[in-house]
Amino acid sequence: APLAVPDLSKCHLASDGETKINCCPPYSTANIIDFQPPSSREPMRVRKPAHLLTPFEVERFEAAITAMKNLKPDDPWSYMQQATIHCTFCNGAFDQAGTKTLLQIHGSWFFLPWHRYYLYFWERILGKLINDDTFAIPYWNWDTPQGMKMPKIYTNEKSTLHDGTRDKNHLSAVLDYKYAYNDPNPVGPEVDEVIMANMCQIDRMFKESKHHPALFMGKPLRAGQPVPTNASGSCENLHNMMHQWVGPPVSPYYNMGNFYTAARDTIFFGHHGNVDRMWDLYNKFRGGKPEFKDHDWLESEFVFYDENRQVVKVKVKDCLTPEQLRFSYQTQKLPWTDIGR
Ligand code: C2O
Image (cartoon, rainbow, N blue to C red; front, top):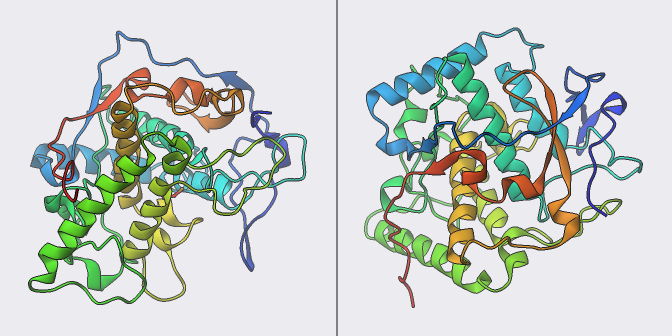
């Protein structure tokens, strides 16, 4: 059966291995309404690469984040509450409806749709805070050579987009998709090899999974089941590396390095913008058809706090393309297509 919305009144402590954490949302008794997809008369929000934003666009983004940080801590729109959503659904603050199985949206075919909605609401809330219904969040374009490092908008220490917990050794290093904790940074001629290897990996990821969506998206998880082992897709697996690369190299693996803190770092949303864009590119690469026709995927439900201060129930089938949600990714060259064959 499809996943159903958990009972909001039954939130419990979440866990990070040893530590118990309170990640319960501040709206345990709310009335849940059905999500209405945005109307086609709404302006399209066009997400751009972080490294190509104009100074004005950076300012707008910073203004929105600042407004979010200035909200009261228990406001469901506040920066920390928004970050905590990741802990809620990734560290097991709820059981799946009617079961004793923890609800976990990583490690399966729910990874991409859940994060698409997460960013969707975050973007719309930010837009509301600066009164701009065209506002779109930037994405970290890590599949193109110019984007294979931390985008500057996040590393400026004076900016509200900065986060002091990141690996200092990576602030201007080249991103290596094969990175494992404490690997040295590529230098000299290695840099070009690493960039080439990264692009080959992306290209391969698309081609290998073209006819096998579960390889890219993740394998099925059905109501009542715990997350199966090795069920995450190649897109999620690749994305895990960037979390490790941005976060601290040694324990405690704060902010980006850890599920429950990851979304406290604004770069999380830039990173997931590109993860989500990968799904969009994959969907188009396969001719725009849904990755799964399985009822248990399409009808699965999540819950979010929306830009109208309502608790809404969303379904996977309403987020299969960005267009359904009135946003898009600005068209960029894909330097990795057809390399490495
Ligand atoms: Cu929910 Cu990048 O993880």
